Image 1: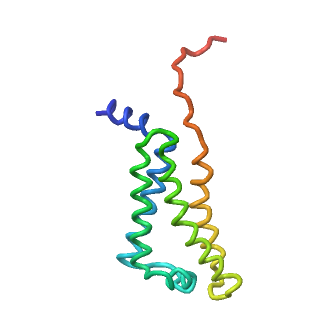
Image 2: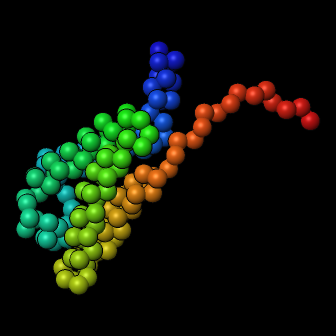
Image 3: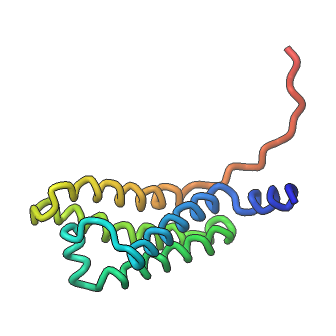
Length: 143
């Protein structure tokens, strides 16, 4: 069993692990918005004009599913997963930022904008990362 888990982890790699984490968070956040909405609706006023919160919740879930599926794709073919997470986090971040300034509707909107911006931006950084080469097994050097 342990060997099978190790093979899966090696196959997924670090990029896949990051996509799995990001996708899981996105699916959880989206589910939360459907089941029991949280957050400052004043901060989301611009997005709620485009679609109700339940629709946005399903978009978060879809982005998370794309990320989790792409986690198992080979390196450089997994980019849709990174893009999906960034694409859902960005409007969320911008809506909160605009609700803080210039609209002045959400005094703490900048904080939430920063959190969602960072959540999505990590994907833009990681999309360009290469998987590290496999570690070599060498006996310890004697001194």
